[in-house]
Image 1 (cartoon, rainbow, N blue to C red):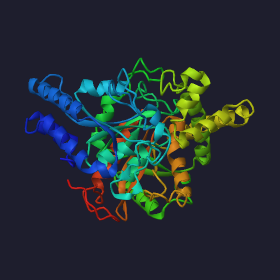
Image 2: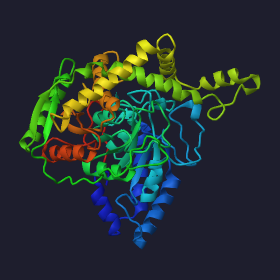
Image 3: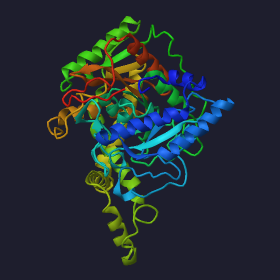
Image 4: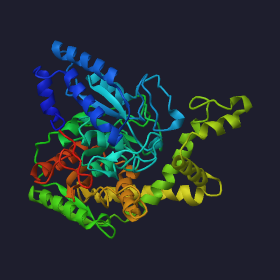
Length: 491
């Protein structure tokens, strides 16, 4: 069942060939069997999930308000609020924090009858790209336990890749859905900024943060996206309806112009990844797309611009953790300064580093020289991409500059990691939707390609990637023998 598509699970549930309780128990058993090694989950909701599944079975039996996701388990990244369920952000500071309300995306999943199966691991407060800055330990790649799962949504990507959940939600501030999706061989979407509500998402950098879906196929990804997307009056940045959420994935892509930006295929890119992404371009060309070479000079400044602006916003976002509403109140009897200091001892070193840098960038001496200049580069990048979309309908690039790196090899892979950030953060700076989808393997390690499009083109991106996926011959998910360790995830 871990390899069954959502469409097949839906038919089995509706025909009563399989109950939602049985389906949920199956995935809970897989978590119990495999997560001790992989560490994708912080909290497993066994009792709650089985109760939700039983409710879904009653809903299906009565044929009342049955949706595509009724009875389907979904894993939730642990920086998304779940009422009465621990939400830790993978931090010691929030180890015992229980929200009093659901995030809008969680409410929509519940309304659809989905089953919340657990809260997944991440880099603390989503600040990282390897799911190793977590108070709850490192998440490991299911293709090779010695390699990174990517981050910060590594737990969600691993949950799907290892067949511990058919669907998952992550958050993407600078590539935190797409990079782990590429490393783990699954599909991951960063929606247009404002198309999915951020209400109930613990903020890192609010002008970049977006909640998005991860799945094992484009069709499954679209169904989850359609469930969580749409206007939300509780989120002041939410885009108004109507925006087309429908997607006919069988429609022709003939005549579409696919841009290949030179800046994404230069020095530092792994030769094998370049070969596979360009091979994907040829598949799209054979399907009737026009391939257009172009240049996006602003991309060279994407990573430093993103870091400066995101860290500045993180400095402001993290100010709330002072022991009053969040965190321990230890030291309160010795004054507010002591209470805030004691509370913030619960933060990890990477979070502290980003707060300090962001505070520096916002200081009176640095604001004009750093923060203001970064905002100007961001505006240039938005214009640069808008000009590109006058020449093409979407862009095809690598998602990462190299396959998943070994733990301890971060210094060795520093160039590739920096280039990967350049590839992914551009979509966050411009607010455009971006999709990572599997496009082959190198030594059995997954490779991801990325499609980026103008605002509101999520369904188009998924359609184009689905045409490639259904044409490609190389595929597969964990379940085959994993290199290096020789271990196997049975399915």
